[in-house]
Image 1 (tube, rainbow, N blue to C red):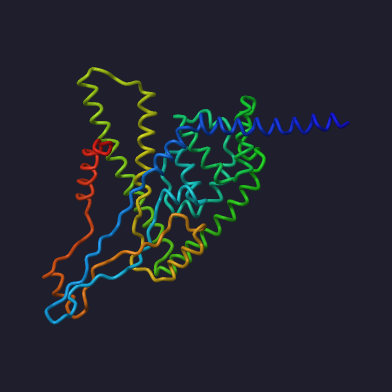
Image 2 (tube, rainbow, N blue to C red; image 1 turned 90 degrees about the vertical axis):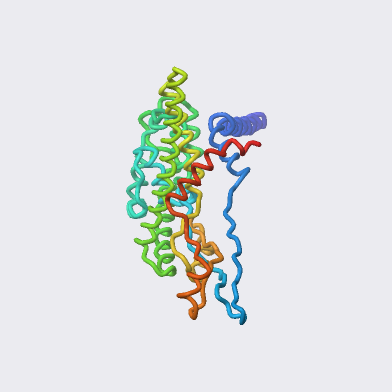
Length: 341
């Protein structure tokens, strides 16, 4: 009897050891590209630091221009799509359909989107091309349905064939994760309404501005991809070579993914000069408002007595326009090789 117990305990320990080893292989070999990409991103981070413009006084010591601290509500699309239920479902369906969903649709139809994802067949993970797209889809469904589901899904996929008829809802833990995601999505919708109210706007306006920020990032990615594709086609024509179509697909998706990670992380202004209550709300309910931040900026203001005259005499600094952004992107690409020096 004692020998049987020792055998059972030893077998359980060996099984656990093998599962840990298999998971390590999955992280270091199968998903190596994902985590190496995230490691490179975490090694360096670019953050804009506003400069202090100072005060300007007249000869009597009265201020003509001053600098004041202003709180702005900003939005990071990458953090929203990786950490919120609405963002995760939207990103997962974008990988499947190739269509960017508006924020209003993502929040309103999140329950239907969860049901659609739960009904996905396991075969989609082997059929979706390129392979990185399949890995990204798996990342989002695992974040949505929770850790127990992620572990069970990994074991089923590791087991190999014979599971083509299964859907995600058949995986242990999916139902509990589905219900948890439903409750989290409801809390996110309530938090968004409260955020809009405290910021002096409406939820519809807030979501429209979120979509505008995403559209700007997408347009920047498309411009760079088209520019690089045109340059590559000219180079291929001059050399007389033609790369394989499958290789082009993988390289383009990898480059698109890299650019999205860069531009989707740029903070976009949603509401300017918000009250302190907005900063408190974001700090308290940060888990339900993933992607939203309150940043304190230093802004040039003019006293009411000279507000009409001082900007004309002292000058005014405005936000960069589309032409300025395009010129900055072209310079960044032209000088990209200098980053390695």
